[in-house]
Image (cartoon, rainbow, N blue to C red; front, side):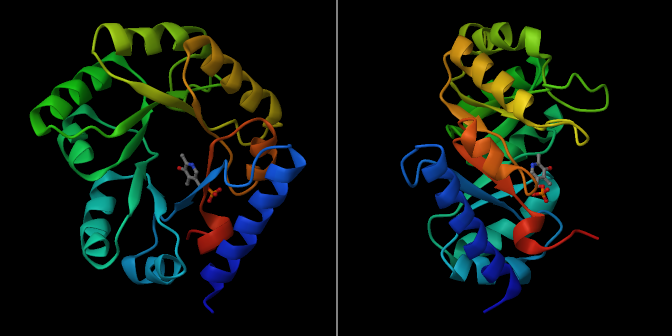
Length: 221
Ligand SMILES: *Cc1c(COP(=O)(O)O)cnc(C)c1O
């Protein structure tokens, strides 16, 4: 068994334990395996082991790997988890099933127009910058509910969920709790939160999906 597959199984087990510990039904959390920087041949064993949901942070990198893998494997669900430039929205709508990083009006407008043009409707999440970090993408927490409403009312978009990346050097719990609170206020159901270092904690705060990269594929060089 490849190392990545061993790690995948360990992460799946840890998620089941965390679900039980949080009194949540088994299977309520989706594992998004973050395969950025790893090439198609490193991803194949994980696909062979049955994993079907993957995250990539760059449109161009994803385009170079996933059309080929989709020819070979059924049922792949691909999430864009990195910042989106509006000039890439055509490619993003064509390739991804979930776009987790809607965070400004211009992107919402570009996606709305592309989705109509292509008649293809990836699920959309709004990224919230819960730590208000200047270098990080995402809408400010205090603007998030209004932004979700504007996505609906102005751009006719369905927002399925919210996503956050807590500051690296902080306890993530309060950030997960804040995202959950904003989701309730905005009336959205999905919560994408938790990465290799904190996905079990995120499950306790209500994550519906966790984005786990290095704990499966190893460290990125
Ligand atoms: C890279 C990345 C991850 C995965 O990070 P790990 O710590 O390797 O699990 C999750 N979410 C986003 C947005 C990322 O860019």
